[in-house]
Length: 331
Image 1 (cartoon, one colour):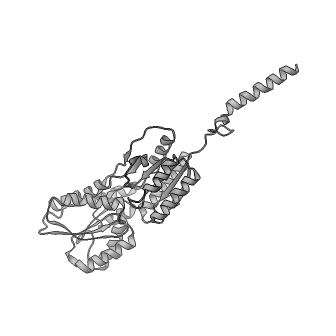
Image 2 (cartoon, helix red, strand yellow; image 1 turned 180 degrees about the vertical axis):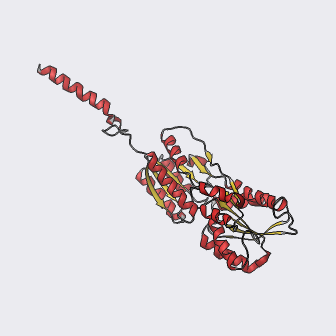
């Protein structure tokens, strides 16, 4: 009888171990899967767009049950590199980041690859000699956004309200952060489209660093130098455009009529400016990348094959559609 008791006890222990799943370390004693740990380095909080992007990523991580280790780089590359090295040291499962600028990432990305930690780029791309240093890039096509801004402008002057305009069309450009992918690409896409007609002339182009305050400051300088010669403002994001609108109004010029204003992002502030007749068009660049990122993180951890480039779907919103679209905006 004693031998039978010992046999039953041993069998029970084996059965419990098999059911608990604890032996392989992938589940806790309660049978719950070990949460994925994602290290994410954000650029900062320089605009409405970026704030919405952060909220989307934090909310999506929560919803997906992913443990998020979040770092704000305050728009400094050195802070992002420190954050990535910290994530490597912590042995997170996946690293994701929105790079401040395109270059200067090779060394730290090689460190992540050596540590066998996959890296996902969000919103902005990097320039590296070896594309295997990151597994995927999720975000907008910035060159196409610039092209869309250029197409809207050329259509405005050929078929729209500006079709009777005579002479050169003088454009001032508020660029994004120097060296960043959206600044480089939005400039290139816009220039590609307007190059087809020699009437379009960019007479001033300077960085506004993607911020409202800097956009206002640079536009003040443009107005001081060029005054009423300016026909068009092309801003690489809505926040700079909104800052520039303040400068234009303070100079006694009507934004949206005396100066045509084109910007990119599609934030609520831009829609409010369009409804007020002060901004002519905003090319959408969606910040709501969180759910796509978390889905990709899960696929990477599961060992699934994922596309190298995942492009977000976006639209163009001229002022005529702003009032109808505004209630639908989530950011």
